[in-house]
Image 1 (spheres, rainbow, N blue to C red):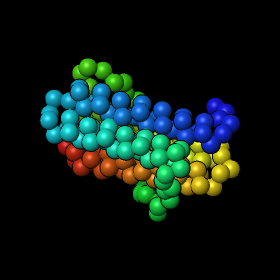
Image 2 (cartoon, helix red, strand yellow):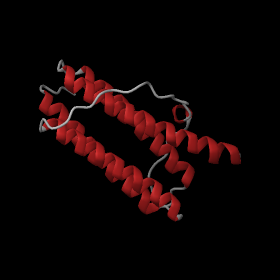
Image 3 (cartoon, rainbow, N blue to C red):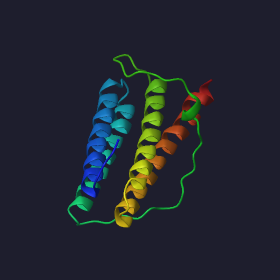
Image 4 (cartoon, rainbow, N blue to C red):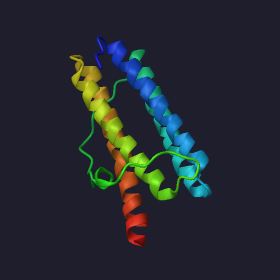
Length: 150
């Protein structure tokens, strides 16, 4: 993927945040338990918040800064791939979510290295940090609920 300008990088990131929100809304719709519907709907709202931040950066209204490093339990790194389907269970939904957040983290790091604009790099690294926090939340949930039960 070759993005030639800061605007193209931001547009691509905005599109990916919308995709992530759609993904979490689809997971929410497939959950039987209301509590899990709420969890995934909450993540969809967070992704829309990221999209709004990126749009604000693009319009020159907001700058973000990267935060401290987030722990990575690497639980999702070693789990088998699963597919989104109508009968998806909680464990599979968590696996999908962990893998999606890892991919989003990598995307923002890759996009940050694709620009020489220091301010945009800082914004993208900040969003990578947010995605790492999301992955950690799913890993902790997986550890607490799935691994504890088995």
